Amino acid sequence: MTEIKDWKNGALGQKFIASFSGGKDSVLALYKAMKVGEAVGLIVMLEEEGKRSRSHGIPPELIRAQAKSIGLPVYTAAASWTDYEKVFMSLLEKSKNQGAEVLVTGDLDMPAHGCWHDKVTQNAGLKLGMPLWEMNHLEAVEEFINLGFLTIIVTVNLSLGMREDDLGKRLTNEFVKELVERGIDPCGEGGEFHTTVIDGPIFKHPIPVRKCAIFRIGEYAFMPLELDKTADDMGNF
Image 1 (cartoon, rainbow, N blue to C red):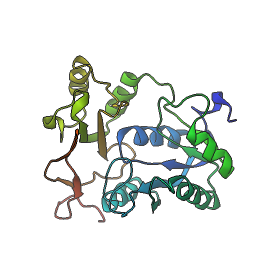
Image 2: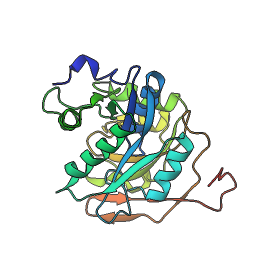
Image 3: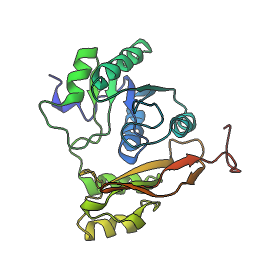
Image 4: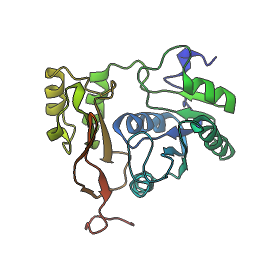
């Protein structure tokens, strides 16, 4: 069992691979880990068809743009829920071959025992680093915003207090205050919302995006983002 006291500082002085969703929590964890360790890349799991990320529904082209702006290689693989663990383990093995010693994740509320990431890292012969583990949710999102990260809300759960007009909004201190007043977890840890990060202190340049049409599936509403190849600030894309 990984020593719990090591989880928050698991990347200290070591090479690590980061589990990356493209959203605020994984980006903040990556930022913190990069302060104390050396990143060798990002892991992103895709849905079966390989058209969008499993966690946040981000198209691979936009994920690659994020990774390139951060300056890291990205390892992706498509998987169903049935073979998710097997495929994830294969990416961990590939990362280990590139020198990774630690897997970094953006989890805040993982249990002290029975943590899935703890199990797979042990099986892969890696350590686990969770820089945000047990962090106060409001403090985490405020730190993220105050560091200068820019993120856009792209998914909302309409049954958990979120509204369709929340889509496309930037996560600011003012909006976080509004969410708290509405009784919503400011980190969205209950699945209330998901975000896509497009700029911040670990990005070499902003990611130019175009907002797509909103659509609904059941209790969820989505506003996908696409890489805007016509933007003037495309960098090297």
